[in-house]
Image (cartoon, rainbow, N blue to C red; front, top):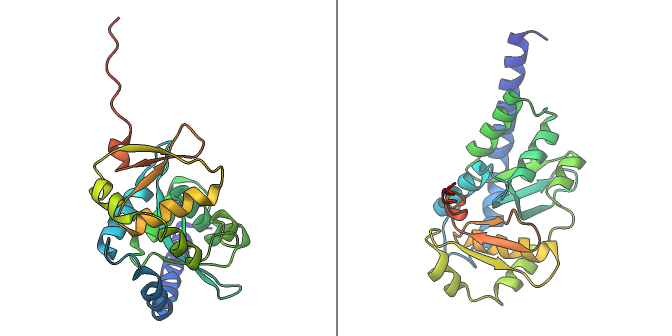
Length: 218
């Protein structure tokens, strides 16, 4: 395929994806109004979009969590999902049938970061699996978990995203930690998975999570 054909193909994909998003805006807004009103006291879309971008651009070994709305085009089901940023990127690569070369990655990154509604549609089964669409807890379950947390405490102590703290989870359950990160994100608080593994999570901007290592005198 020559260069002109490749460029034309990319433009068609961008146009198609943009149109799909516009057609879905009504359903997206309706979904958000039902779900996000629980967190309106603590955050807003401007803050969430900011930490979404920061989380997505975090390329460290301690990936950040981000939240977005996903629609399964095979069933019509819509869920608000939290996942590690690389999993959303991977899902988009599967959905668009793109490789992981530099140009393909830049194209996917541009699609994700330009999507300020944070609404993504997936039909590819590998893409849906990448974000754990089927297994992910319902918004009702997320709201139930949120009701057990002292959100005022977390917002007061970590809402600036400049207070760094390490937190370990007692339960060895993947979705337990994700649900917590999900709730924190909707409150405007960015979190990241610890690179040390296990059920560990960091609060705060990725750039200040890891303290500088002092020079070692020889």
